[in-house]
Image (cartoon, rainbow, N blue to C red; front, side, top):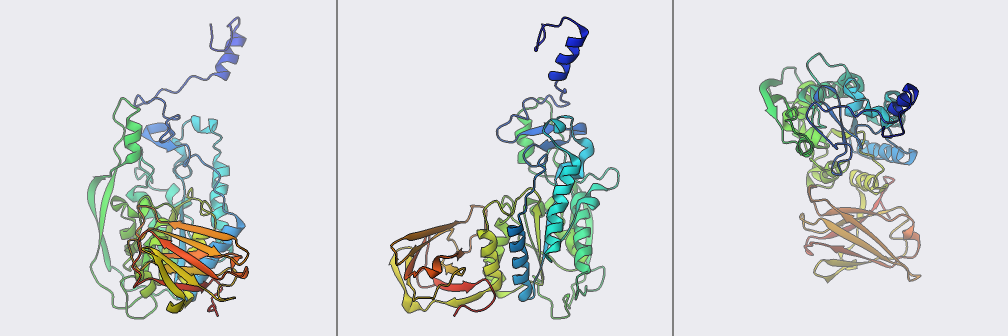
Length: 440
């Protein structure tokens, strides 16, 4: 008896085989990877593994609204002399499709569709004037024996990071006004094979009887051998003239992305990337920090895997970044601010002081603060509440930017700010504009 029906003829047997194809055997004795609740994965060829929800995903939506907000952020940074360079990292399946298993097709994966989706994001941002780097071709065509991604992990190898850094460097050197310092200011040396701590490999290994390929790559170290005296625009150089923000791809020391960038640009790159910070953790930590407020960089390189949707959390994160970049803020007079509890402030406002689409900037006075809530009391008796939470892996700064939307015109006479931690003597509140002009 067959799984599907009684086998009476060879014809029926063929039908059964087509309905229930035999499961491909695992080279590592793996089972139930595709149904693993922690990390659904498929085993590809030659020891390569692909995540179902990220690597096989073909939809990377970037709405016109979110694309416009990224462009607004880039414009806000440019107004203060900073160029935003957005670097979407393509998926493992796009870069290394030759190792995909047949099971990828059963999940509907189509390479042409996936490639179109990636380039659609790149093209949308470029069309809006955002400097955006297309890494796909450079990472897809690496020399034999230099894979772009690790086998049983989702991170890129040092070869993939080096190829990406070269394209990013080429893009930046073509920017108007770029004036690199003397060549050979940086030196990169090989360290031999380096293994990384891989959560993905650990999860997969629990479902496999044989040892999976190690999460290892050729390690590199880049050092500055000839400090430069001039920055890219001819002024006295600042250590943070080029800043890197991003995810674990940029934070992975073994891949040396920061070092390869420094060598490609012949300029020091300061790395603020955060592992596990997702799309906004690193850039938000940096742009709400005192370091950014006091020393604006010439270039911010924002690395973000394409599967990290910029619209996942709505538009508030991008609005917050834009307000932080523009800093068109008017402080609220301290006579209008009063402490109403250990970690709470009440701010009285006059009619029109908080216009529509303004942003309320709140500094708790305590850099360890990770949570703040804004509450608007309106003349009609309604209450508007909004909260901002900083995840554990994000570097806390105690600074928050709350979009007001349309509530400002509804005769708000006061609002309250509640923090998880607050130092009242240092706390400040400002009303900020997103259009560049000062709030009146």
